[in-house]
Image 1 (spheres, rainbow, N blue to C red):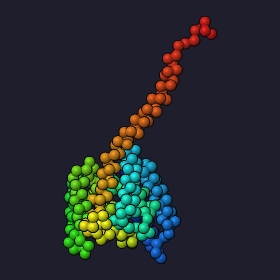
Image 2: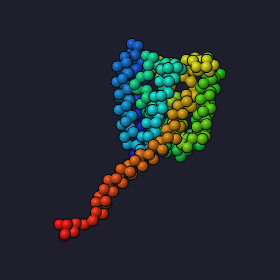
Image 3: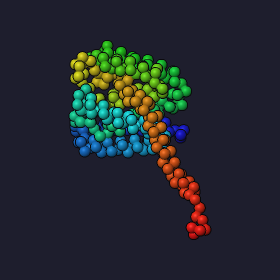
Image 4: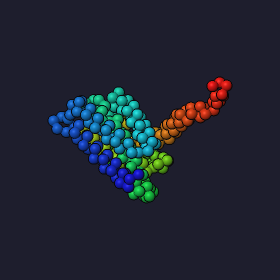
Length: 259
């Protein structure tokens, strides 16, 4: 892997997020649905381009995140209205955007700076995220209970996940995303959850990285199985290709009488 690849990915992700969100919501009321689709196409192109030089497992992780996030988006936003996008839809840039968020978190987590100092970065993440969640719960007028609950999920992932530094990166990228997205009005979280009408939510929830963490956990858990299945499939095809000429060599030679 290129020495600077992780830095390039992080820079691309952290730059593309505000570009898309400001382009979507800025100006006189924001772009039209067609404009959102164009932003979505650009996000897909960038995501595929960044994944093109990644190993099979990382590509599989990106695919899992996009698939899982798409299901969650259409369930919790479009159907349940836990949070609502500006045009009351799911913008085309959102599914690939989740893949971008994961790739950015992965790049931060596997970088030499973070991976060689994992304990310190995990402790720092818990401290900063904990203070942020406490502020949301106590001092924010919304009394962000969901953020506090998701902070607990983030702590769990930081201690129990197979690649905990990915969740260090997730806190950075997701917080960046949510603060900008809600700040420019690309989406808005409800004050109280519309399902049980009990859990109060910030805009955004302070512990949002813990919620996104379920996407990352699914990717880390399922990608090795997908990779193994792809390897078995490729080996099966190779065996079929090799077996045909081998079988031909085993056919009996033509005798002079037959000739």
